Amino acid sequence: MPPVPDTGAGTRPLRKLGFLTIGSFDEADPRAGHEETLGLIELGERLGLDSAWLRHRHLQHGISSPVAVLAAATQRTRRIELGTAVTPLGWENPLRLAEDLATVDVLSGGRLNPGVSVGPPVHWEDVRDSLYPDTGDAEDFGYGRVRRLLDLIEGRPASRFSGTEGIEVYSDRVQPRSPGLRERLWYGGGSLRSARWAGEQGMNLLTSSVVKAEGPDVGTPDVEAPDAEAPDFDAVQLSHIRAFRAAHPLGAGARVSQGLVVVPTDSASPSQRERYQEYARARLPRTRSPQGPAKLMFAPDLVGPSEQLAERLLALAAYREIDEVAFALPFTFAREDHEQILTDLATRLGPLLGWRPAG
Image 1 (cartoon, rainbow, N blue to C red):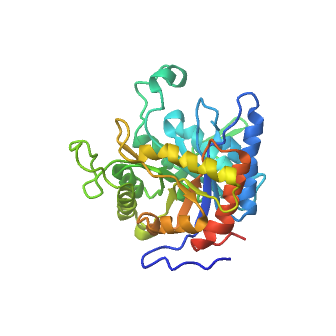
Image 2: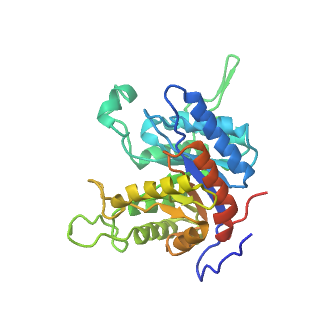
Image 3: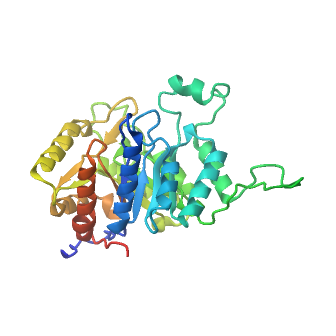
């Protein structure tokens, strides 16, 4: 095992190493893709990885119901933590979701890490008649929807009625109760406002390879000075982490997980290395300036031997302030690619970052 490098003052040794996938599948044979995702989670546990996260893909050829898939994963694994990164609450009823999350958490033995976000559903005008045909104009797609979910998981009343009616016994709170789930709720934030809000709620923070183009000092979108140099992704992400912890009751001890695209190539074949590098090159132009009306900034994908990746990660100020990661698997890659990447993460890159496999 290679020695752990001197990471410098202020750098946290990597404590938790996980991965994120969208669980792609072929529309003509969806079971195979879902089984492949479950197999990756099982492989992650065997490799000693700490967590596996699924991303929602509504009306696409990716997992639309991560909570259901993670319920299956609870019965195939015993240790690895299972998360959603993230569940867009605009598609969910907080009361029903709270019941599903508590049920899966009980099945997992307390390993579920639900991540959520807010905002109207993607392509809202096209799906509103199917989602909320009668209440679309009244739905709250803001932070209030998260607050409802938090209250319900905390055990606050969901009904004005409780007691016995005939032979039926009713609770006024979500059942089953899963103590500890509230402390494992994450918010997927890409702006200073959302980072601060998540901290104020005592949630954990998921920060990814996408952030809002804000000045790290003032926290406002860089839209009034289009000719000015765009803010640096790393500096913006660092400002989010610090704002989150400044607002969180636990301060510097508040949990933050970073979700960059990181692809080690140590055991990859020559053809795999070439495809991985081409994938990163094709996506590089979007990292050079804020994109779209929302002024989104994208982090470059990190591809290469683990020694180089460790150096590049340790050069990032935001990375040096966290001790948990859930690196995203490129969704266009094949199963054998994902298996090679996970294996190199666990056996090559992780140890270089000071991480040790669980168990």
